[in-house]
Image 1 (spheres, helix red, strand yellow):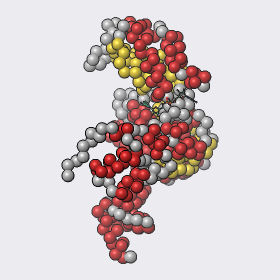
Image 2 (cartoon, helix red, strand yellow):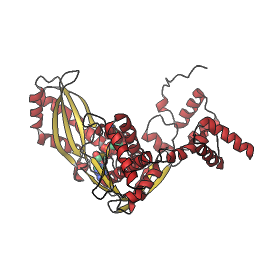
Image 3 (cartoon, helix red, strand yellow):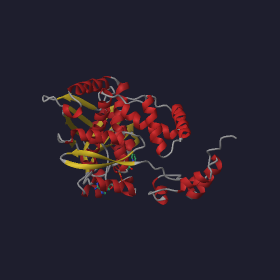
Image 4 (spheres, protein in one colour):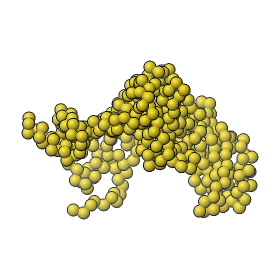
Length: 423
Ligand code: NAD
């Protein structure tokens, strides 16, 4: 059978049920598949259909709670949505090992976002740059005029930067408007301002504007966490010193740093997703920041304090909000935010950065000690399920794989068959 055509005219205008029927017919989904699509769980189908386009169902992922997390003197239960095993356990483990020593301390550089306006075909870009900078107060009025609600809440235009950059299309004059978006992530808020401002910049400079869009490199919205682990809480000074070696590897080598930072984002993205925030925005910011000195490196730094404690720091952009996007619309995001009990987007960002540091501690601890054995135990359960294990078979097969020291799909099938034969 030939693959079905993906040219489905009018698909977006169809009802969800009609879309499901059409996709089922084209791709051979059976009745059970369609019933699965129809069960949307806690996310109402109408709402899902409003949040994104061409909806045919919803996609559930587990929501867990990270325990043991003490941040700035307060205990938090942190909801995390992830499909990956051992991510939540890692945060709990890291939190437990520093809880008695005070937990995490966090801070934030601010809640400012940047939007860019691209200007081309300017004969005198350096001159134009200064002319734009001279309009600062007019620019403030234009930007603040776009969002009286934000201004009333204490946010709005804060700063102006204009850069001349070289490109394959010649020089570009890039205006940055810097806006305090308070409890909103702020993408739509600053995009609206940039759109409104662009024609004015054209008029003042004689150039032509092109892209007007926020930057996800939110380096005016840096969240910072620090924490100290005492040697006795992590298995001794030897473990601490091995953690230093593992972290120095990540600092020095982009191949290692990418995985190191992926681990940090395992924690951060799971918490960001649980609250209905934009995981891709936070991830883009994180990786851009990891490259800020021209070479990709790890986002955390690890040191040994005078007292001999292992000290970790994480600093990264954290553009998240309590309003806007799916945060207010998604019912589970609202439950997650209630669980967290945060009062501001800043507090939310501070919780997330602490989760990132906790996650990284657990990862470097595992690499410095038992390798990925702990992770493999949980991974073995996934492999057992892939092989078809059900109910208590999952644990039994996973245990056998771990005992064998080989977590492999083919062996899972053999072990499952053996287990069933024994029973
Ligand atoms: P939004 O526009 O839905 O809400 C923000 C607005 O809410 C503000 O402009 C303000 O008028 C109002 N508001 C009410 N109470 C507020 C408070 N306490 N603090 C601040 N503002 C308050 O949302 P947004 O945050 O501007 O945009 C976020 C959404 O944009 C996300 O869903 C994201 O996925 C999406 N997005 C992201 C990108 C990107 O990251 N590149 C680009 C486009 C859109």
